Length: 311
Image (cartoon, rainbow, N blue to C red):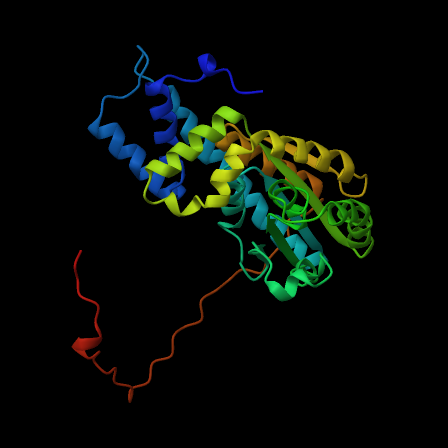
């Protein structure tokens, strides 16, 4: 069923939401600076008592995000200490916000411990392999966290909708994936699966924002545009996927993701609740005194090697 266009935002509201989405794509520190500049250069969106609810809400978001990122650091330490193996799958439509939450999870973590697996389309050799084979090599060892930005569920989504797999391959996937995931869990892997859910209207606005923002146009591929046209087919594929792969050993969790900031906080908070962890005490770090040798003379850097001071 097509969306009710009468319920869609007017041009001013759509522009404001796309502007917020643009600002949201920057790092938090830059976003705060941008907020300050906007506050100085334009009249504040303040109530009669001088408060600015939107700015207050953004600052509250940052405070909570930084708190949750502190807890993620504690979880990381516990994963190393307890030698856990953690896999987190992020699925959802194009522009649903998967990359945004992955970025906020990894932002303060050690990339040697927490890494992202975002696999491209399979090559000719990989197409001849067991379907799950190329994903297995990215699974974690003890003391590691792997975040899958899309996963083996490509077969249930894009491959099904775009006709990249046969009906037989599609059905074999659903026969295999529950047992495959049970095997992962039996092997000691903590497996979490998140689906990021957005509305037809919201994806429409986010795609428009990407088209109009030269810094984000690279995110739009012909496949993304085609997925927009096939919204209903993706909906049917998603519903089938959730129904046939929601198992007690590895259930699906749906994140309401129209509000990106709420989605990030809700997902990170939920993830932290799924893995019992304790804070690990670390010995106090002390910088050793630097050695000084009287016979050492620092050589000047050749001028031709120095990057020019343009700023």
